[in-house]
Length: 248
Image (tube, rainbow, N blue to C red; front, side, top):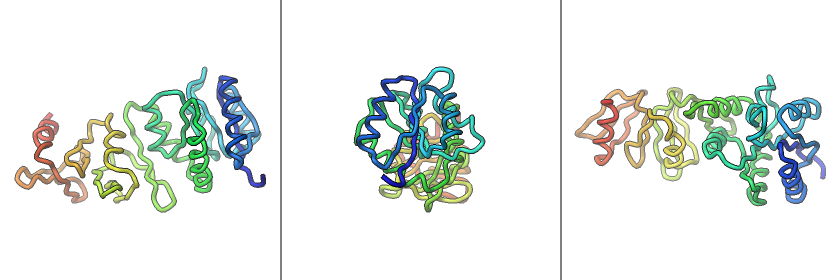
């Protein structure tokens, strides 16, 4: 098949490498496996020599964790699909940083879906900034970066610069210090994503606010004034908890 996407598989377990190799060969004709590696050090040498477009990368490996691979490169000019047996928080970070991932044991449909996403992403040339955000997220107890897809590009924003998140039907509007952006994620998604960050509080069925951007709130109108003249709603059921949080 012409114009195949070149890839390598990195996993410290030979059986895992073999299983994934067989699945890719059988079900993903758009990919061409050019090498397999047993650890990050070998992968670095292989990537520099063979210049694959995609790396299937296990997370839990001896000596270096999979996500540390990017620290060996001044410029990340390849895509990564992470492969993991567990670590739910890492998966959360991958999703927010727009990184594809597969859970072991790898399901065929999930593999196909990841490869479909990959063929679109590979043309965007936005990988380096995304992986920097990913690495920061993984090294922190809190999510520190959010990747916002906007008009075919990716905007990296610090979570501290998020003023509020407003539900708009099946979408969410991310209000930041530099502007507002619409994302195709519901508010529940962001509530779960930001649950490690105590600055964020769900004030209403349609609002999550960053308490560090709080300016004022009206008890009678049940409205919250935030930075950039953003006015959020406060549910009467959330009012006691909200007042307790802002007085702590």
